[in-house]
Length: 367
Image (cartoon, rainbow, N blue to C red):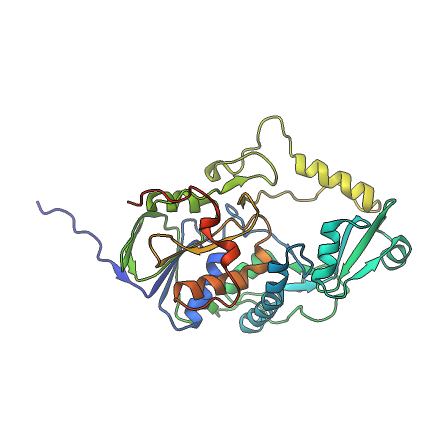
């Protein structure tokens, strides 16, 4: 009896592993460059097992770190372009109030990042935002660009278009996003991309042309981007990398991504209690208990800066990881940088601060 035949590899110009917001934007930018791109996702879409799901994410220009502040104008521009291309509202501009003690270095860093950031004392804040209570010795910085990104809709918009309308004008009077209907337009596929969900990557074989084996097929490409969130460490370990990525509840215990819904013993939702206390103290007119609680995995680096770099031994493997809870707003730029690195181009923003080699001992003998 003849042995069962092995599946024939399917060739692409580029493969991206991970269809969260970072990987989806990387694939989107590659497809816009007329590359034949395969985007692989281990779970059936949509899902809530990673870091990109949920109704909302904050966005802002205020940043304590200048390298991220310099990236934000490009990020706003690219979000706006995606809105126009997908025909959907992705952002509601509300403005952002950043609170802190007067003279605080991080608060001052936020003000500097805004250029002419406006300082609000208790009197001005009470007049403009009567529901917000400042405490003794505190001031606020006003970021007029701040707002809410509609996370689930944004992720879908990179892949599938939605209804018309944009949110990039002045703050809207209602806190509710405009209604959405789903048409047939597929932004990523319109640019020539292929999205395959429900396919877990089993093996990555490096080489001038890489071979990727999944639970459903075998694929080959001369370039690979890995942006698999909490699963990135496991994917790159056989490639000789030990990345210092901590998968955690925010500022909490390390967690296995396969046990993401497990609450660590002895810590009954500490973040909820902390936020409820903050709401009661600073927004006394608001119900302090959340209406909905969702689990979202954070993948943190020790310095909470991103990893955006080539594999030290395999230059055609690009890694995007460790977004440390502040990567969603910057995803359009991150995807662009990953695309540029994979094509051997000069990155449009410096990636030196995001180098893998800033962490000692990450490189082992690659297989």
